[in-house]
Length: 324
Ligand SMILES: [Zn+2]
Ligand SMILES: [Zn+2]
Image 1 (cartoon, helix red, strand yellow):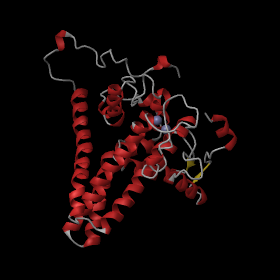
Image 2 (tube, helix red, strand yellow):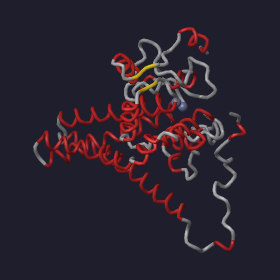
Image 3 (spheres, helix red, strand yellow):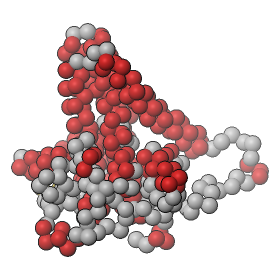
Image 4 (cartoon, rainbow, N blue to C red):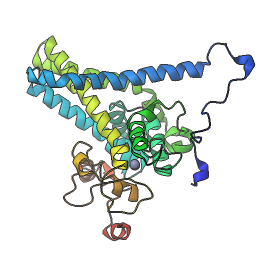
């Protein structure tokens, strides 16, 4: 793919063609209404969990939290987070291993439950990110506006959250034809709303039954639904923003991706992002023994249990050749 294949138009070009005079002052087209509706939904999905995080500190102070909430939030974080890292990212986007149909569907559902968009859209966006990383056409490069301090600050915001509101979306037929041709994946993508409901309601239901009261259900919803979603959102988006601005660059890559050890634990190994851009199809991103990568450990466990096969593990000779 060449730079001339850019999907996004240059910044100076309007994303939407000018409206012809005779069609002005008429009702906005259906697609525009839908796009606006999606943006309101997206803003709600981002702001409500974030507000919960802001409220969390005084609530912890007042001991409005129990071990039950911590366990539920951790379990939900691990299921939905690894749904993204192992499922959406290492499997569906980069084909780092192969899996049988039930595992494939389970991974897509777990990823949907992270509330970061339906599987096919997520994969299409991420493949476009790798096709153009940190160049024109990258949906979320922090270097979009330049290299000055103000430009990078603006770029960080764009790479972290702003890009999600871009009206122009990645062409899924071009970037994810394999998933569009897979009836299971089309169905799971369409069931995104149901997955969101389950992701938010399950902790409340389990918490309520476990604690035996309505307050226990509300408390579990707060911690294991809202706070958990917010933390996972911002950790995932930090890979797009922070890991393309700071970090170490031990391997050769075409972009500015860096390894950020501080995020390794919460990102489940995804913040070894320089290695990932150097060797995108590897199932393991933390390639050194001390580089924490819980996604890789789980893939290893799944391989041992024969749930996945043909895993692309790092090859020391190839890695040595990629060292910067
Ligand atoms: Zn990246
Ligand atoms: Zn990737």
